[in-house]
Length: 307
Image (cartoon, rainbow, N blue to C red):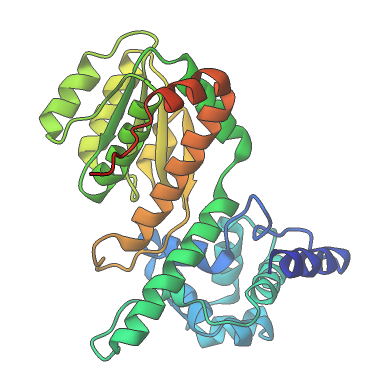
């Protein structure tokens, strides 16, 4: 439960585990490792694979022990820990201990992919747990100050322009429908050339929200660049593992915590994470403009008539 997790966290902090990224505004270490895998060097991939597969064993290994197990060197392990934001290997281990405690020693099936030998029951279980873990991790990843700033962007914007390709475009459509309910002018086009044209014709006072889980989709990057060329704020809904180009160029980032395998089956976890961010952004916006928004929502309510 949330209460149990909070108690565990407090106990760990009192024991000296103060660098907990798994706290309210952090992202789980195992999830961060998986997201970093695609941009990691071959040596780092060996470390990530071993830690992901044997997290409990790593807790008891020295830096030399982990180096031997991953066919690397102690200096390579230390450099890897520092790239993750830790002062050293001990801090890395402490965070791993904290995460395992918060997970209640459960295997994080959100990191598992579907295999051909899975039964339908196991597939449903994996999908359900993956979605739940992804939503929980995204809630921890979100920076509430940034979310509040994005809601303020929405409130001030003359018009909101949404950009996304593939599954991310479907998430953008969800936000467009929500904004239409509160009479907020927004533009979203299914054709990418139309999206780019929309970006080229943005006006002062407009804002852009760009959706891309990877943060590498060139079409979305082009639209975001055009929006910035017009001095319009750009909000990015993307993962925040350091490999997202979209995150580096945006004025504000609403981070998505999802772990899609290399061969993705329909962008399932990332779609759920983005939808969670959309819901949070919409709710924050309505709260910031409560009287007007609720009045419009009530006015737009369509009551079904019995026949």
